[in-house]
Image (cartoon, rainbow, N blue to C red; front, side, top):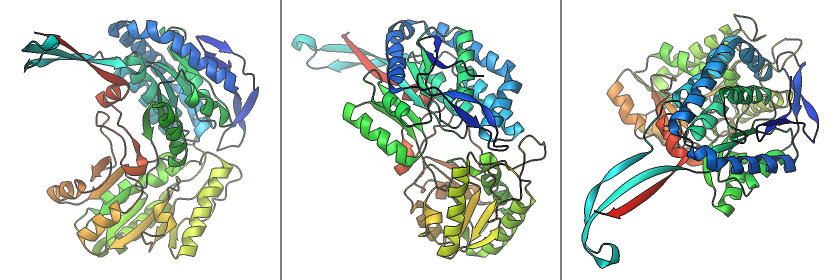
Length: 481
């Protein structure tokens, strides 16, 4: 299945050999993944540097055409690509098709649209113009590529996450070195094949993988890299930021989350349950935007807990290939153990397990039952730390002001949620939440809206046109009028 590393337009044998990628549902080997060495990671960065000049000077229309062809190739191969994504990640078949490969194709299509890279600024009177002469000054603001971008993607959605970095970076004339997550890199190599077939020139896209941290560290530290775009944990993001800070490299960081779902006293409870319940099912809770910390007004608390527990109990946990499966496995045995340790910690802290809490009786696979922890307080570790699994904790509050304060009392600030039948009230509350995004009566997202977090949830914004801004530098050109 593996053709090796993708460096400078060629497929290269990994000097570190290969390691096995496991199917989280069956625990069987999906295929061998290449283990790059730090030297090969540096070679990929050098190839990207060499390709930068020609690619950045390519006409935007030509870059757009290549991205459009890549979108079509990915869409045409949706079924086999989705099967690989399902096997690598444990996502259900429907999720792999629609939210992984389907979203990846849509992102390449989105950034195949040519957008203006420059705009005129109105002339202004300059009292001391060039050479001391007063006059009218004209100006032009131009978006230039940042340079070589290291794209380090997350394991929960290798297709959509990698595409969300590669497509806008290439559209703006950057070249990229992609370091996929070690758990599921094979999908990203298939994406590289599609880009190669679409006509991406040698060196514009490079992919290096490895089970150890050395490969990613080498890419981040490479003097050929101008920017790092990272999706993953806050702890790893902090280490990357330290390296970038020493060299003044640009950063785009989409990190952890502990999304607050603020359920007000006038909320539509079934709607809130349906939205919050996606934490149990969507990627088995392995998603930074999940509403994992529910803050419920005391007047609706008991009903909400009862209905959430019933909702969790109705979800089928099992083989993601089965059409009626809703909750698949988590990514690995080690991560399953980590999530289970948090559930046990919640018990010790005084939380009440009202749903789940036990490992499903399945012969193979890394499964966790959808788990609901009630009677939590905001100082518990289960309420403050990102668990990244199908676990929801519920915290009661008495007054709206208290609920807002609890929502903001966190190290994170990625996506929060508000449920209220009074939309004006919900918007007023949303404006007071310290989060990069807020969903009002929904967990859905608008794919043109800026995405990113406050506090330890990240640095910068992407998605839609904001991604084009993220992967570019603004240059001003001024001349005498």
